[in-house]
Length: 279
Ligand SMILES: [Zn+2]
Image (tube, rainbow, N blue to C red; front, side):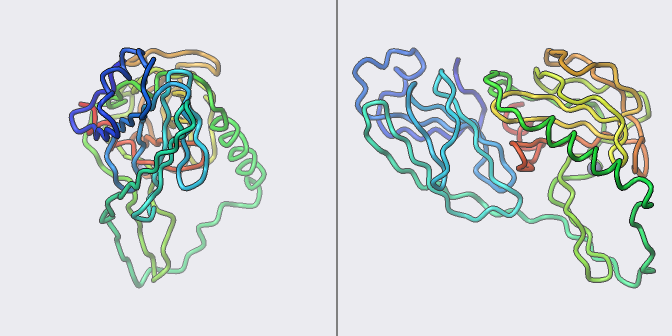
């Protein structure tokens, strides 16, 4: 149960880290902290502390599983400085300041557009409200499930055609940033689970078309948008690499692509950072 990753950041507050992974914590008086992930905006960080520790980020307590593992995320526009506090089983408190790097997002300014109404027709408003309630429900769990601590791989093969955080400014009005990573490819390209997960949503939604949500545990979810077909059902557990559907252009998509998203609860994080860290 080693925390892997070629650029895993290891912050050792004491020299007892080898004991941490063997589970032999009998005489430890100082906790160790291991963080796996890039300390940057949009990043999901997976961490390890001695079993029985409590962890908080900026004063908010995080769920620590029985193995001492936890996750935390930094949003698209997260500030630079964060305070991580660990209370060891012996009651000692250790505080670590985390500095995360700022990212340059792709901002596209388009002026002189016709102010055409793009709001959805009234008749579908109720459906849209229902959809977002279902999505929120499908991403609301905090399951003690270990998949989130394993390696993630691309759910589809193809060129990256859209990145996390990018934003269009139309006639001076900033639009909602893009929170997924887009993978292009022909309709029918297999989409597979990037790591193991339990299906919490598998249905056709107004905006995102055929949509699948996978629960990877600890409040971390993958969402796959615009699928041509869905080949799984809610409640199914998928192993990493098992197919969940095919690439498509359903919903309000401009062309065939997979839009893959990562959420930590309602926090939207960059799926691509999970891949860079582990492959
Ligand atoms: Zn997209």
